[in-house]
Length: 611
Image 1: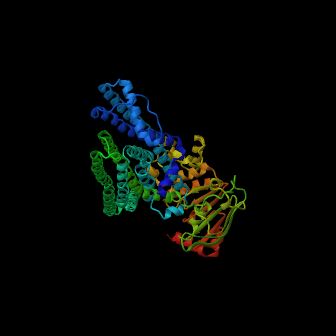
Image 2: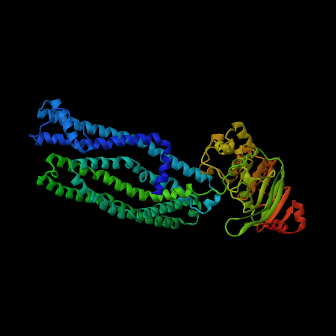
Image 3: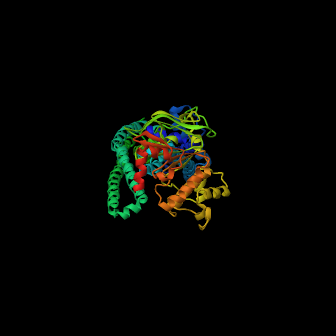
């Protein structure tokens, strides 16, 4: 139930709808009970010709005679209105019953009306909360997760809540109140018979709870497997070119079908267990009604003073006892749904409650710019067990270009991840103008940075919207100017809709060089003082590399730049080249200085020249 109460917290902003829903359900339960109670005077009119109405308005003397008072008052009013005419009395009671059912259904509609806003609002807020937290979490979280599983939680698990937990909100007030009002009325009609009913209630509850015990576990398997096949689908769409190129369609098809077969089997077991709820409660209810028929029938036939029932009261009692079955079955379904939705809620809360290690400190400050230097002071970092950076120290003055080179796995890209606070350093400090970046708000830190990665990450939108990602206020003229700096205007101006052309999913309508130039233009438009270029040309052919390299040189003018390079020909003019090996600096200096040293850098240059 803890997951259920956690989900209910999201209903707080919708208190007015919840209040309207509760009030409507109170009236629904009340009129639902009264509509059956109103049958009693009608049955008296039809079957009891000897019973005479009181001659004056009866007095209410206390709760102990409320049953007699209600009967006498209704009988007096009916007689006053009809003048003792049995036919008119019958019409009077029928009209009264119709009014009760009308009011009951108006209350039911209003309850559903308010619930629409409450339920949809809660679902929207949960989905937004999960997405917001997903965006906020560090990259380290996603390296341990399947993307498909994250998608399944934001979509499938939230929908599971919509059809499991949230319908229970409708039952919290309506069904219990219906049972309470009905039992109270039954208690007034016959205390002995109602005590007999109470024997069945704990037995029913025990049997139902036993059946629903394993629902949460079964539901968890279903939702986890859903994440597996969604992840397979996402990987298939991402790597379709490779799958087709290696004739691996059958491999992925087999993997997908195995997952959906497991989902099929788990779902069958879950739904078959869930489907036991309705027939079980129905059978238990019929057993209870049969017991009432036997015991109540004996009370009617016995004629023992103080324990007997008249025929009309017994018929109304039987109607009320059967009415308990509907809310009882609804509550049973609700209990099943809570158990089933518990797994979905748990998976959603795993994301929402995951601590964010790179969250801003309470007293974090905003920085407005970059004035003097960036400094790495004895930093060490590990993703898991082994350190990929060890005691790394480097100072980068403003306006200088520093290149990081070395073999794969030497820690170059890790430095870019640490500067941008995608990860936190394990030891040491990174300072900007003497200020530790952990004491700076993440948003103001990243506002000072422009990032161009090896993979040009673009979105299924227009060119202008892709470029304005870091500068929403940019004008069309500024966008075009950024495109010119990035050597991209030459192909953008020839597109059918120019800067308003949609570039497709991940920029699929463009070549690799074109995509990379757009990502450079995006960084230019943001106009940050510090540029981080993470192997921005390594995925390009020689001709595209030349064009992109010119664009990069244009962009780096008068800016502080950190260039992570695989192709050493692109960083020969850097102010400082830092050579890394196994997470440590082994050499640094200008290109000619490092060549003359005849060390690690010279070997790297010779290897690429040989290639």
